Image (tube, rainbow, N blue to C red; front, top):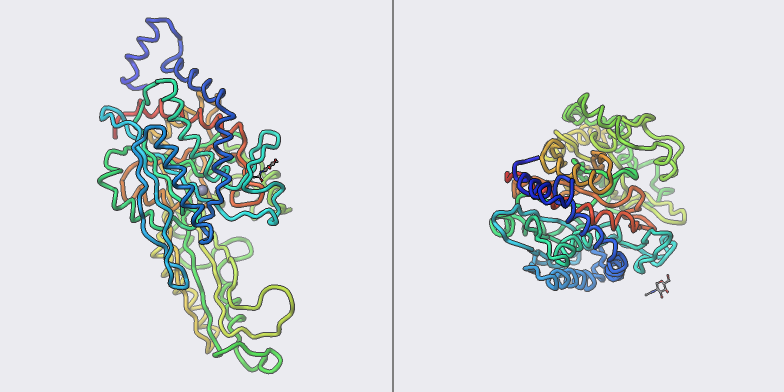
Length: 498
Ligand SMILES: *[C@@H]1O[C@H](CO)[C@@H](O)[C@H](O)[C@H]1NC(C)=O
Ligand SMILES: [Zn+2]
């Protein structure tokens, strides 16, 4: 407890309203308000999910623009100071350009005596079609046994709405917001947050100047236990191109005489990682921060069921058989994934072609203390050297097209202490402290550009199926998650200014 809390505590004790330490009477009111507005919240989510804001499909761009407008209108109707920030255009492969969805910024409260938090979220979604194997129409939010199925429900529309409803609840009950709340909501997250980095840099000394903390709720819990996320892996994405003959050849006519690009490519790809998951590129494993005893202990305490993890993904065996190894390799060790090969023959049929040029796509998840610039050189040098051993006349070209750094927070930071207190208040348990195997590059950008502390506070369930068929958000997580945010603002208000 900080000294800031003392006056309200004394007041509470003296007036005998409650024996709870602080603000509890307000929390109960706010919490009841949220419960009694559940149907409204679900309806708003339905309206938002109905907008097919798939940022990867240029033909859906009008829907993305509409989604940003709807977000801005909602925040405006609540009396926020709202801006739709133009972040320019996206270049398409054919040389044409298309406008990027604007970024919505909003501000509620500007009391200099209060902390200012900024909530980041996105309202664009991954593609989804009924024929992909959805049990319900992906853009028609459908409630089945308390689960709300729809594309974008969990990633990230319900969490964004839960934050909006948090502010709304305070307003509706005429309870002063304990902190100033800003929002930054984008519409290109699923395709790499095109244009957002530049916007953050440009607004560093304006929009972000008074922001103390940045809160991101764009991930999920690990189990049924609430979680706080303190790290994400980065990603370095590579293209390895092998080029040989000037055109595709007939394998009957030329096979056996030419040195084939695909064979070269598969040969070098096979030198990246061993069957037991050991990365073979020199220098990569050496760069990884060692697993501390404390970390080991933390993983040991986390609720994680290996059998249900296996059955969820439909495999009989995993790379490791114990919980700590699995969690560690999911979160805090790098890995190589080969995603595909462009240019070779694919699809049905049995074409007997020798492809003239093939491009492998693979990526390496990044963890502390790897540095994408160093990884780029390590991978390029290594592949060139293994390729040279083949003495092939073909040409190899390695390029790194994405180099996203990992992000790691200090779980001892007061932001996390505040998070634990909020989880305790709403769910009456200690949260799991977890990391995310995936990449949320914007976290690192926020940290590097603004120098502010960041917390990831997920409300999505472990089985929400992000990016997958039958994505859902449970009513429970949506509603209790809103209460968590309400409680969190109270806790953050009691942190000393950085
Ligand atoms: C959404 O699904 C419900 C049934 O769950 C159906 O009644 C309704 O017509 C559907 N709406 C749209 C827009 O398809
Ligand atoms: Zn997301």
